Each structure stands twice: as structure tokens, then as C-alpha cells.
Image (cartoon, rainbow, N blue to C red; front, side, top):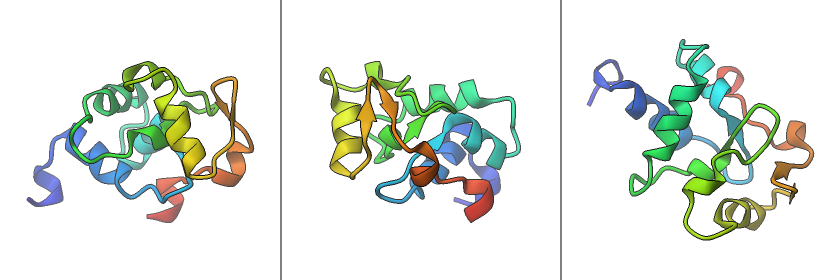
Length: 109
């Protein structure tokens, strides 16, 4: 399928699949990269609907590094556990040293 024929959610999933192991990005960074800067919330909706689509949704957080989507994961702390298994430190639902683990698709892709 050509990129221009993908719907917005599929474009979000394509970008999310590129987030490297041990890195995170934000809903807004993905939206900005896709040319839809005011659509961070739609990226969040896409992440919520990504289960079963082989998308590393745990690597997408809000702009402050908060695990705002954690309640969409099975288990109490699954999102945090997945991030910590990749070496990302999380305290009180917030990524520590966000600048050092942040991946900005607009700068990398």
C-alpha cells in the first residue's frame, strides 16, 4: 500500500513502528511530523486502537513524558514495565531524563 493511500491512523502506526527500542516520542511529535500539528489527540486515539497491530504504543507519551495512555494497557503497570524493560526510567508515571530518550520523527526521518 502506498503511503499516500494510508488513512491517518495507519500513518500514525507507520511512524510509531519506527521509534527505536529504548526511545519514546510524543503524540504531538507524531502529529507534527505527519503535517497535522493540532492533531495530537487523534494520535492518542490511534494509539488506543493499536492493540493487536504490532505497534509499540508504550513508546508514545505526552509532551511532558507522562504515561497518559497507561490505562489502555492490560495490567496495572504494563506500559511502565515495557518502558523499564527497555532501560527507560519511570517515576510516578513520568519518564525521567526525557530529553535523553526522546525521539523526534521530524528531526530523524
